[in-house]
Length: 165
Image 1 (cartoon, rainbow, N blue to C red):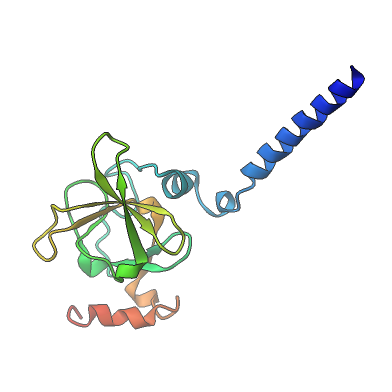
Image 2 (image 1 turned 60 degrees about the horizontal axis):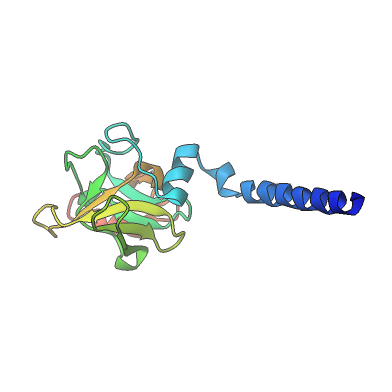
């Protein structure tokens, strides 16, 4: 009987250790709870109550985890949805698409290829430039202002603004 209890205690202890190891995800130290939930658990932040939905500054939006450039402010527009919306991406290889049926119908989920972070969804109701709407959670992005691009090692992306400047 004592042996069984000891084995049971070891098993329980092992489960506790596994549980504790599972909780030690380093991203939990780097990201806010909302950023973690959105990027790792495919959650969605509230519309009109997020950091970038109405940001109108010039700059680049990068993956909050990897820092890889994803979107440019010149492609951003007001879709009326309450989330940052873009009609194009900086680099086709930066974002991967997959089918999402979580709401009972087909949507196209977007994830960053560099970190596998959930970004948002793609819809075909965007403006005439591409007809596409990349509906993105602010929580999966970090915004780098145009004037900080050189400092952040992203100076090459200034060329995207040449026609605007």
